[in-house]
Length: 325
Image (tube, rainbow, N blue to C red; front, side, top):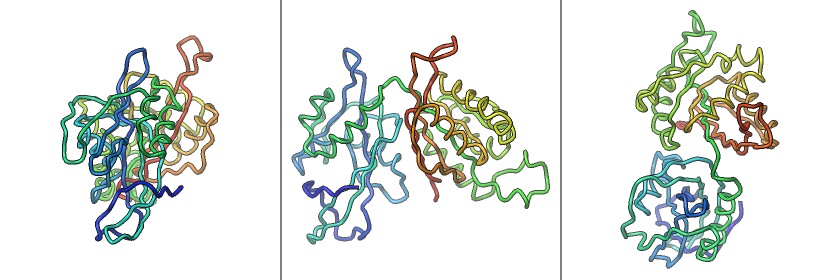
């Protein structure tokens, strides 16, 4: 993470000496000719043009803060998709001391709304990527825009969730299929209920395990959809035929709208590695803590397929840790 000295953000004297956490987004909408338009905001306090961003409120995760800041600064609701990058630079406290600040950025499709000048932003401009590069005041915002433009807009998002905490298998005397969430797991489930909707899911699937179903039941109820059972994405189903499990996930990803799939720790790391190998994507450690989420972004390889349409290929994989961790 680099350090950029020239941005003039200030933080209060009471801010901690550790990194100041913030989040933002490249907010976009379809433009003419198929090219997206991105939103830039002008902050009169700094007289700069930037991407929407702001500090995390207590208890917030970066996706929460990104969506909230977009709404507060631009007036538009949004749907998040892939994680883009992290930017780091130093900011000044009111006493003149310098402290590090880190900002996590997401891609965000604009939904309903309208801009109105507010205490932080006095102007919003929708513009092409090339024009945005000319207007943006800070070089690191250009880097974020570059990350946004590395993938086409015609991608599919799938949220691969590991079920919330359900205690130890050895401590459960009944059928393991019926092992339920613990109290800690129900807290994780509730946190996921607020996190996952930020990505605009429309479909919900689960391995046939009670703990997996319980993890996504509130989300499915909020969406008014059923939960599709996926035996190939259970531990025994996947381990018997990993290729069949990966192909099933790809078919889910090919459907309409973002999908949520809840599975198990004996599936997710190997499944993500297999999809990454198919897509030529190099990943480091593939973590899978209970209650965590992999945001998987697929693009279609139009030179491949089996007669049923182009095959999705994994283009990006980003890990969101347990929201209560």
